[in-house]
Image 1 (cartoon, one colour):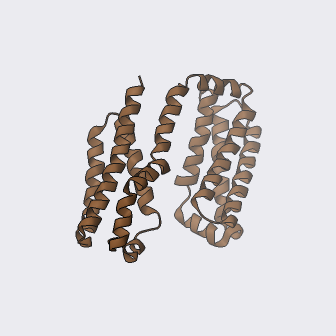
Image 2: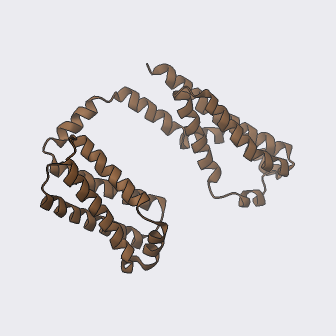
Image 3: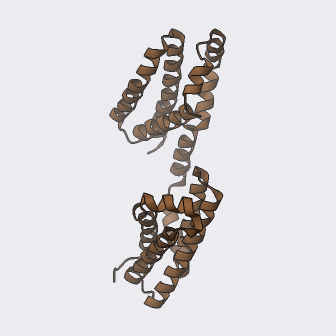
Length: 256
């Protein structure tokens, strides 16, 4: 038997979930589940995989008896199957995926709380090690890199946007060629990456982000043959990058 503490068991359960959901579930199983739903045998195979993983973890890393480990494994398998079936019936989508994962994790956490009477005290000790001033400061920075930064960039560019719409530089065809909200999410990812690199002192990596974006944008701008549109795109990119860089430098100075 492995000699591990309660928190390690929780991490092992979460790791087992990740392995079972993303590595031990072939794409063919997922496709069959989405098509056949409750009639798919792979729905039950997938649930059984999670039950076996939990059984092995409890049997090898805890003092839980084999019969109790088997019972908990069966409960996890049933719960996982029900949650997955409900997700399949509701439909696909990112928010349903997040809800699905959240419910699976909550189920495992409840099992862990049941196994360890001192689980809350262990979590309390872990929470005491967190510097909440740093946590909320960094969280605020990352949240600002999402929609708030997009709104700021949009407000800054608003007068040029009106000019481009008037002159026809941004045509309906150009907008139709883009994926819905793709530019917005690309901006999110760009700013989050830049902020992360700055906070970790990886300034060279910031240059790679700029270079990669420039390469992909170059083709679009060359085909546009429009000076105003090119300047508009460059302004948006530089304002977006500047917000991320400035925020990163300020947060880095505030952190010890």
